[in-house]
Structure formats: C-alpha cells, structure tokens
Image 1 (cartoon, rainbow, N blue to C red):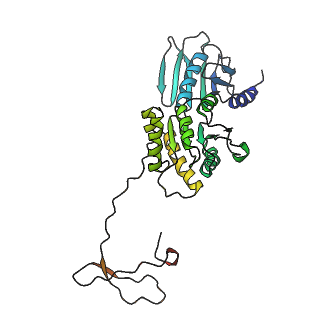
Image 2: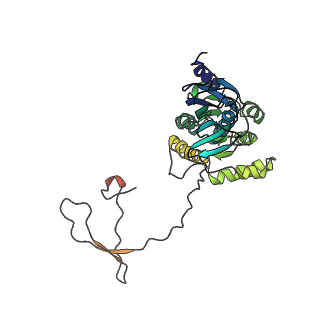
Image 3: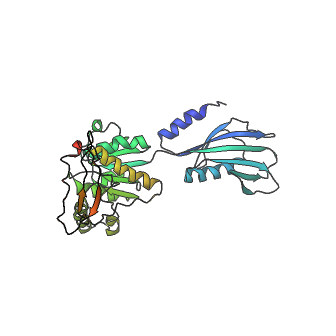
Length: 322
C-alpha cells in the first residue's frame, strides 16, 4: 500500500472542487487493522481513499465526515468496543460504541477541506477588476462575468465568462452563492437579469440608492420576481467613505465576509444635521511657537458673537482636520 497516495488524491479532489475530509488515526489500541499515522480522504458520499481501519470503523467515520463538511469544523472521534452501538460526547471528543468482534479502539482526527467559495462578479469596470484582485486574498474564488471580457484583463480571476446573457450564465454557473454586480453604467440591466437568474444567496449592486431604485422598477416591469428584486443590496459595501475602486472593492468585500460568517451588516443611518451653536471666544495672546492657542468657549450672549474663522485648509492645520 502506498501510504502517500492520499496526497495525490487530495490534489485531484481539490482540482475537481470536491469537498472531503482528511482523516488521521491518532491512536490505535490492538487489535485493530489501522495503525497510528494512517490516513484517508473521505468524501460526503462515503468514498474512502486510503486506510483508517475496517468495516466497523467506517460508518462512524463517514457519519462524522458529513457533519464536519456541513459545519466546516474539525472533529476528534473515538471508536471503542461496547455491547451496543452508542454515541456520546466526552469533552471535545465524540465517542462511538462499536459492537464488533475485533475489540480494538481507534482515535481519529477529522479535518474538513472545503473548496474555496465563489464570488461571482459582473462587469468590466475598475471596481470589478479590483474585486477580482482582492477576493482571492480573503479565500474566495473570483468568477468574472462580462460581455466580451478578456481573461488577460483579470489575471486573478479563477474563471472568466465572456457573456452576460442570462441563459449563458445560468448554464455556466451553479445556482446560489454570492454575487456582486459592478458594471458601473455599462450593461447594468443585463447583468442584473443574469445575476438574478443565478438565484444568489446574496446579490450586491455597486450603485447609488437612487439608481438602484430606477433599475429595480425596470426589472419588475420586465417580469422579474419582485421579492428577489427587492432583496438586491444597494448601495453595496460598508460605509467607510470609499472613493477609489480599490476602496470600494474593500468595502464590498467587508459585507461579503460578514454574510459568509453569518453576521448582519447594516448601512449607517444618516443623522439629521443640526445647526452648530455659536460661541464667543475669549482668546488669550497666543504663546510664541504655538499654533493652537488655548481659550474657554462660552455660549453666545446678547453681545455680538465673534465666530472663529475656519482654517484655510486641513493641510495647514496642526490642530486636526479632515
């Protein structure tokens, strides 16, 4: 038996984007056919590539692998002899009773290996390019969709689809997932239709609230499901004052990460502006070498208010600024 075949199997499964768990025997108490250090790759459909023991251990392993792949969390298990099949939790170890004749005990560690989740980005725009560049750095596979897109323009994208027609996109990509439309004025409506055809888990649209509202109305008028259209998130991204394409992409990815982690991200609620109170300033002579004289602020009185002149520019202020 090739004890290192699991490495090649892991590479193959990852290339196929199939989820699996690496199962390692930590401890084996005779009589068992498995030995400490034995490894196997186990998929959700119960395929076992490698060796971790005989038929008595495999059902418990496959069951736990499925749970680990669903949760994404590793799990330690112990399979021990008992008169009846039982399952209980001992600290952080899940113990299975094994009513087999071998009588041995196995302790195994199950480590799930999941394909990187996809982020589908629509648009051939500066923000779309920034998204495909940043997404892989936070563990996402970026798939770029744009009419006439060239793969050379998106070197960090795992895949480039050069058509934004709804039928072509639905055939090329599975339903669900995370989708960002960053068309920025070029084929906005076509991209939104194709994005909705994917029935995404969450759909973000990089646009102003006003523009998004107009396009929502157009989508509903064209026959799109009003509930799905209403679920489009726009404006997209955390309110961090982003201006450059890279900053906008960063803000959008922050909400994508929050969605993946089950966190609710809400846009900042605008606060009604209130007129600033006027103050009279009693300023003593400024000390030599100082650009920030002290002084007590007093509420305005019946006397004429003296308002401090605003600084000429933030770069000329040593007392803070924008």
